[in-house]
Image (cartoon, rainbow, N blue to C red):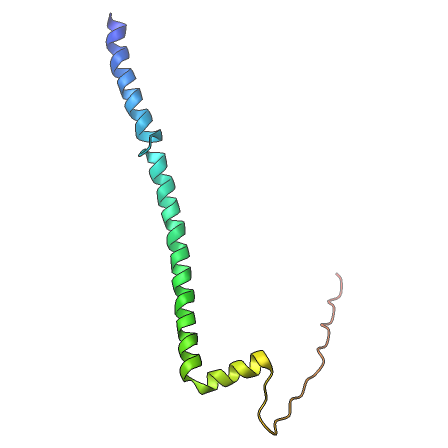
Length: 99
């Protein structure tokens, strides 16, 4: 009889602890959700930074003639009238001596 008296509360406590740790809203689930939230927040911050950079670039392309000219020169190889472009062959890097 006394063993049953200890068994019932112990079983109830074990049952409650099990669902507190492993249940749908348990500690492990909360831990995983917090970790996922941090990862998503990092992705959002990265995307916001990229978005801000792109907004600045769009503004520069619309309003800044010097930036537009630099993009045309860099990406399309355009030159001004009477401008001469010198291209030098790239030299291979010297190899380091073996030790």
